[in-house]
Amino acid sequence: MKLFENHNLKSYNTFGMEVFARQFVELETAEETSAAVAEYLQQWPYYILGGGSNTLFTNDFDGTIVHPAFHGVERMEENSDNVLLRVAAGEPWENLIQYCIKHEYYGLENLTAIPGLVGSAPVQNIGAYGVEVKDTVYKVQGYILSTRNPFELSNADCLFGYRNSIFKQTLKNDCIITYVWFQLSKKKHFTLSYQGLAKALEERELPLTLHCVSDCVRKIREAKLPDPKIVGNGGSFFKNPVISVEKYRDLLTQYPDLVAYDAPDGCKKLSAGQLIEKSGWKGRRVGKAGTWKNQALVLVNYGGATPKEVLGVAETIIKDVKTLFDITLEMEINRI
Ligand SMILES: Cc1cc2nc3c(=O)[nH]c(=O)nc-3n(C[C@H](O)[C@H](O)[C@H](O)COP(=O)(O)OP(=O)(O)OC[C@H]3O[C@@H](n4cnc5c(N)ncnc54)[C@H](O)[C@@H]3O)c2cc1C
Image (cartoon, rainbow, N blue to C red; front, side, top):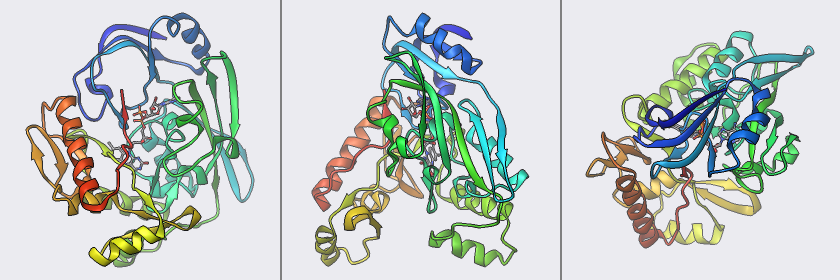
């Protein structure tokens, strides 16, 4: 394990905020977790940080950051239909995608090019283009901080929901995920329920392969989302709001083009990006912060923005969307 004092977090958060952590503990193996907890997590506040692509630091962090930096993808079991992989928390998500393409394992290709590390993927049940990580997570292993015990949670135990899981509820900031196990298919199958993806693949007129689907997802994302290496951002800043069907019908009378997807319990999930866009926020800039020109749901740091500026934009958007649609947007990003 490595220990750093007064550590600059600029390269550990995709918003590119220049903030400092009092202490930064980098875990080089999963086995170091319990020792790190005993030694470093008793005195000050702490935060478990993966790639920082779903984290907005709002200030210097006067405590200890724990960063799992151990890697590895292991094949644990295999039959003619499926494979079971155990992946270390510090493995970059994109490495896992590339591994699956290389070995022809199906299930994660729609989640191509999501930034971050594997250990964070179950936390908010990452999802894109009709697929959520819960569809392939077999179990999650880690360490509970309050009880100092190891844990192992099955898929059902993880209580996955839309951008939600037990790791955002009862285990929030109380566990370090060390390994995520994935059950993936060795039989060719794709999820093409997302119209934009199906259409783009049709236009390519290529035989459907893992590589082709993954590449198509990447191209769609590149056209819509800013590259955090160039323009600081944290992806979708807000969750898509879920509303009753009655409210949706009411809104349709005023906004007939309002997009909605079916959600559990007969509700409708709206596109937060569309609501923000209709509130006049697409590509708008206030000082050094604003929204992205091709996707209003993405708040960006145009260069040198302070956390206060980004939050100021977020709060004004919430207010404007509330005024127009009577819907309160909820932030998806973790504010620390
Ligand atoms: C350009 C861009 C596009 C994006 N697109 C998508 C998308 O399509 N779909 C989507 O769902 N998300 C998307 N995101 C959000 C983000 O990439 C994901 O949420 C990702 O899983 C976060 O990974 P991270 O390692 O960067 O997490 P971090 O920001 O480091 O952490 C996120 C949360 O997980 C916790 N955590 C991290 N590691 C661990 C661990 N080992 N144990 C316990 N808790 C842990 C943290 O404490 C925090 O609560 C996007 C972000 C960006 C910048």
